[in-house]
Amino acid sequence: MNRPLAYTPSTPLGRKLCSYMVLTDEERNFLSELERNVTRLPARADLLQQGERYGTVRVMRDGWAIRHKALPDGRRQVVNFVLPGDIIGFYCNLFETADHGVTTLTPVEVASFSPDRIIELFKRFPRLAAALAWSGAKEEAIIAERLLSVGRRTALERTAHLIVELLKRLSLVGLADGGRFILPVTQEILADALGLSIVHINRTLRRLRDIGLIEVAGQQITVNDDKQLSSVGQFDELYLHLIRAPKRLEHALEQAPDRNRAIP
Amino acid sequence: MNRPLAYTPSTPLGRKLCSYMVLTDEERNFLSELERNVTRLPARADLLQQGERYGTVRVMRDGWAIRHKALPDGRRQVVNFVLPGDIIGFYCNLFETADHGVTTLTPVEVASFSPDRIIELFKRFPRLAAALAWSGAKEEAIIAERLLSVGRRTALERTAHLIVELLKRLSLVGLADGGRFILPVTQEILADALGLSIVHINRTLRRLRDIGLIEVAGQQITVNDDKQLSSVGQFDELYLHLIRAPKRLEHALEQAPDRNRAIP
DNA sequence: AACCATCTATAACATAGGTTAAAGGGAGAG
DNA sequence: CTCTCCCTTTAACCTATGTTATAGATGGTT
Image (cartoon, rainbow over all chains, first blue to last red; front, side, top):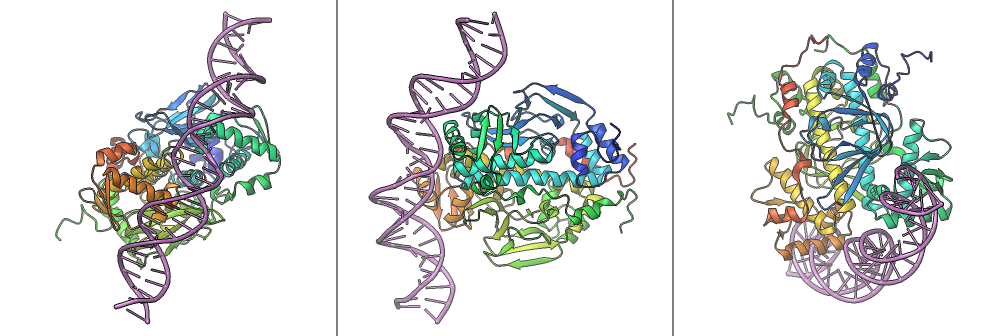
């Protein structure tokens, strides 16, 4: 392991931000300090409970989780999947109480730190703050796209769309290969993510299998024809904002942080 | 009009941020500079088109708009309503291209400024940056709640929920009084916001009228029994995060910005 | 190896909500 | 004043998806 640490931090969060911009040593140090305090949790553990008072900010280092909201009678909607490198309730930690829960799907490794560090980050590292804002905006875009799915796509389209989305997002962090990935999720959770019943998800997956677009073997999903699957799901990757930081941001951020601010 | 300007800036954005924390003169000046460049547009004008390259950041000063996403075949989902004081694509302006459109519902007054000002804001005004991050997180929370509605609430519940949400949000900016407000929206747009057909929205509104929970007169909606309407919609205002900034944030932000940063 | 719990799979039936069609408002243009 | 155009309203019918029920898989535990 003698890759220059300067370019590939060992932390998922650092790696993520690195893909937006070149980090200074100071920034890198601050980030790796944030991820110093690591915890392991089993599958099906609550990282955050709806209604709970926020205490810590967390970064998912390894494993999967879901962000979900529930109605009093138990109906539940999965808002998003939390993948390695994702931050759990970054801004939300600025709230008093959680309006959603976060539950692990697999054993996970998470780093925790105090919300005060966020304030510190805003004050000392404006470039990191902007980069995190950018990545927060990406999450919002993903949720808005899921709203479009649930509101306006048919069951078949939604399901196809979600599979393509996960394939893309996992490929980005090296967790999918040749259209094949592990989906550590029961059909109940899939149903809750897509606003469908568990029976209908089952029917829909079967249709996708019958058409030959996907193969399912336990938790392993293989996408046979991603072009056609994307087209069934009317998938347009625009919303994932996969391109690095836009030139504008990159340019503004690539200068060293102006700590003595000469701006008039 | 001789209220001390220091406490009630005349700009919607400034007023919004003021409710989170005490602003310094410098911050106030910066904000009002941002809102200097004002444009008026008629109803049904596109403030932003899906797929367009971002050019400017906008703040809604007066009027309504919708944020919406469309599928290639024309099906459309309204993601959120943009009310006075809301920022249009604040972080999103850091993206290359828009993954959603914004269209006015009424004649509007918007302020526009260059995205560069956002970078400047992050560098010079960390407290404003954090406050804007907080308000961005609130928008995400609203979208997540709408996802829960569309995914898991029945038509009646969703509709009730949206009406209560709008009532609360409008009350907050003084645009609703005694449960009465103007909803400058066709039933088609309501349908697109709730993931329903236009016919079914009509049926559902009728049911709410028949039960006596609301009254509709043109664009004016009167909520007769907001307790019961909230209960039908299983409305829990937690997600609106109406409380001022949490103590933690408030405390951290209320100090003057530490421009010379003595933090180790 | 047998047991239990949890998932998946399918069938049969029920219904919320979609679609199509057509008849009224209402408001701005001429 | 009346002609449009766009919106709302309602009815009749249809279908995608939900519900209930049951049987198989699967995998961990004793």
